[in-house]
Length: 238
Image (tube, rainbow, N blue to C red):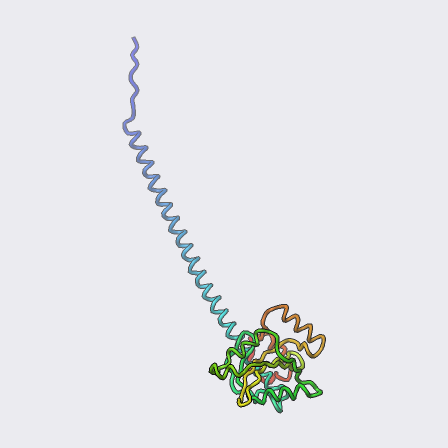
C-alpha cells in the first residue's frame, strides 16, 4: 500500500514575501518624497525667478515712464525757446510749470502771452494759427487743475487754442484771464503736424488722433534735433 506523504510548506516563504513588499514600499515612499522635494525646489526657484523678473520689469517700466516725462518737459522747453524766434521766445513769459501730464505740460504764464499769441496769429507770415475754443476734453483739465483757490479759479472760464507753424507743431491752449489778473495759465503740447497749416499737416494730425496714443517724446527728440530747437535739447538718449 502506497501512502502519500502530506505536502511540506515552507514556513519562511510568507514572512520573506511580506518583508520584500515592505522594503519595496519604503523604497517607493522614499523615491516619491525625493521627487516631491525636487519638484518643490523647482517650483520655488521658478517663483523666485518670476518674482525677480516682475520686479525688474516694474523697475524698467518706472524708469521708462520717468524718462518719458523728463523728455516731454525738455522737448517743450526747447521748443518754447525758439518760438516764434530765438530773439523773442515765448519761454520768457512762462513763470513756472505746475504739472507735467501724459502728453503736455501745464504752466503759470504772464497774461501778455495771450496778446502775443493773438498778434502772432494776425501776422501775415503766420508763425501761429488761431484755432478758437479747443474741442478736446483734455484741455478742460487746465481750468480744473490750476493752482488757485476756488473763488479765483472760477473767474477763469474760457480757453483759446493756438498752433505754431511747422512740424513738430506746438499747441498752446491758454485760459482767458479775468481783467484784474496779472497772470493766467496755459497747457503746451507738441503734435507731429499742424492741421490748420496745410493738407499734409491735417492728415498727420488726424493720424495721431486715430492712433489714440500720446506723442512719444523720446522718439520726437530725433525730429526736434533737425530743427532750430536742437541747440536747446539738453539731453541725449543712449
